[in-house]
Image (cartoon, rainbow, N blue to C red; front, side, top):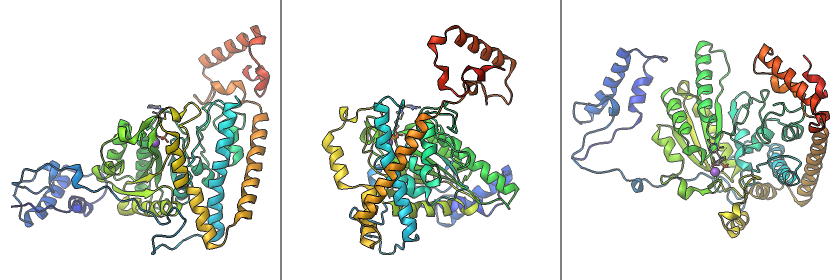
Length: 455
Ligand SMILES: Cc1ncc(C[n+]2csc(CCOP(=O)(O)OP(=O)(O)O)c2C)c(N)n1
Ligand SMILES: [K+]
């Protein structure tokens, strides 16, 4: 007899009728009994294992094969030619709002090569561009609430731009000047903004993912204690390479078991530095992992800003249902650029592959074609937009480059509320050292020079 497979949701449904919050052992056992009661009614055996209460018994010895499961489809609304392919789609933005999104994508794509070249000229120490991924960051950010909490990896400058990070904010961080919100302590591109609810980027891959689950759990608990608080979700971004880290798995599982309102947003761009996805995994991308952890999952065309917006809007809605739950979005794209200024990607991929991709599809060109077809964009508007953005980028660049670095003293601050006696001694040692070797240190670059080290 072939066993009947029960809907996966039945245990969850059984648990959902029970009161929320930590459950007593008796309540937990009741939920398992309830769920196994459902399976008994459908005619399977009487015993059910606590680890698989919804699994029916079978006499067929059969291994589940990945090939039995077709790859998850990739949702899209607008195709490469800017044509709407989802007939049910209704744009929810005015023409002016669409232009705003487009300008944010353009801004990033104009700032990126300027700063990449600035690194080559030795004017900043490092840079990473996000060419080909502008729709993912701008589109998803446009579907979040400003109060939602965001964790980024490092290739999501479009999220910062969309949430209100200005060109000055970008440049101040890149030049590590005295206006940098991080006081010059991080490598370039490791932005963060408390005001915009975006946590500071960390170089250490995937650490942001469990942080995001924890933050989502905190939001959920705060709202249980005070239901008048606004409903917020956490959105966390990472590459498919970062999803090979243990932190990714721990984060998904804790979010699933604790029902945390977090959107896991994977940018699958085909490469983790030099490692192509073919060598990174054998399963159906990152989406299959979400499903494996019991998380509602969708795959989307990352070059289609409309599709990215639609799935993010829906994901946000779902993440707030039933008291909160995690969602996974896998956005497919292609990393058009080198990984960073420290990489030459033609050492591991063919130039023709990249050229092919550029010709075939591009998120900015796609939205431009859409806007032109709708009749609210044309060549002269494009030219004006590109020129004015380029002017703004160069102005912010030269303003930020001219500014002094933060006071040297700031390197001792913000660890403790006040400088500890030990830190005061170290600061004094540094001051004496600089005074002893004045030719070795150009303290004039730093706000306040050596005086900031006086206690
Ligand atoms: C824990 C850790 N391991 C390795 C690295 C080195 N590293 C930096 S970026 C990167 C590739 C990550 O690729 P992916 O997550 O797919 O993002 P993408 O760069 O493609 O946007 C690696 C291996 C790191 N920063 N941290
Ligand atoms: K990647």
